[in-house]
Image (cartoon, rainbow, N blue to C red; front, side, top):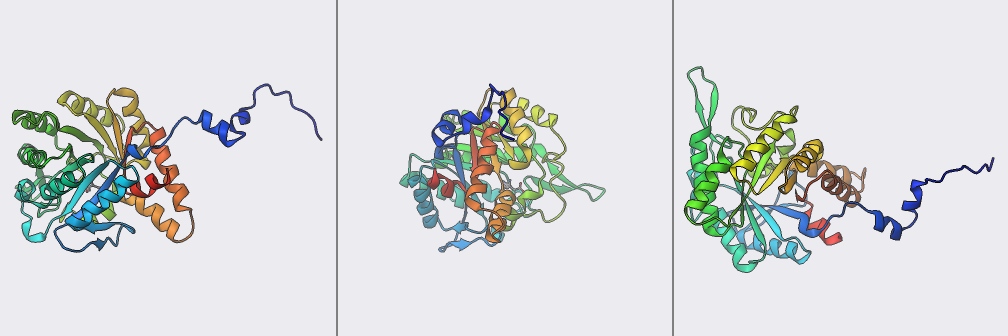
Length: 331
Ligand code: PBG
């Protein structure tokens, strides 16, 4: 029974101890790989977000404190998502380029306290749009909802300028309108903001995984869906096409979103383009781990770490994740 195999090659030798496993480890996660998405509102108190356990809609003061706590554990980049009061929303979302709006005030507050933290902003109309879409909505003669591309891009340019003026390090268009990267680049450069970076949501899929996020911000579409601008989850080559355009238009970094169910797209872009790739582990991915862990079915610490390692291994240079602060603290 104790027959000896003749096996000159035994892969298990490379797994025999923590030290050896450490030597051969191919992928590592670092706090500086992580981007921490933060929700904010124009209120005095911090409100727990029901659809996203462990997360808050921060007041301005609370936001700055949370940035400080994340920075303490090594997270050096945040991305801001505002909840805008209903009465400030409009069909053209003009509030999105109000220089005294919530986001510009937040950027200034963070940069004042923590100038070394990279502040990234989301460029899209949905938090400001009374129709809950990322672009301007009109009804055509047949009563069909249409999202106006070029008119929306004009507003996105103003929004990006407003964020850059307030001190944003990176602006990140998440709207999926055609041509917005080139237009925003030109608008920024025209007024001397050539140092402001563009992180493009290049392959943003029309995903049901965004549900808890829309709950957190009250930003779900009032009618229709986002299928005429966000990508079809069935498509892979289309992501390459989007990426080619974004690179040509001047994007500094490309993003794939969601992350976990789209690892093949992360790998495709990482293999095909010589610019950094970001992946966004979205609200639904976060919530699935959180709720399974809360029920005791999985180990939150291990599964969240493994999920991020998988995203990094697929080729992401950086990851937007709601676990950023917790994970960084454990690295
Ligand atoms: C909006 C935007 C969305 C997310 C980031 N920016 C929602 C959407 O497109 O409907 C989703 C993030 C998440 O689910 O965590 N432009």
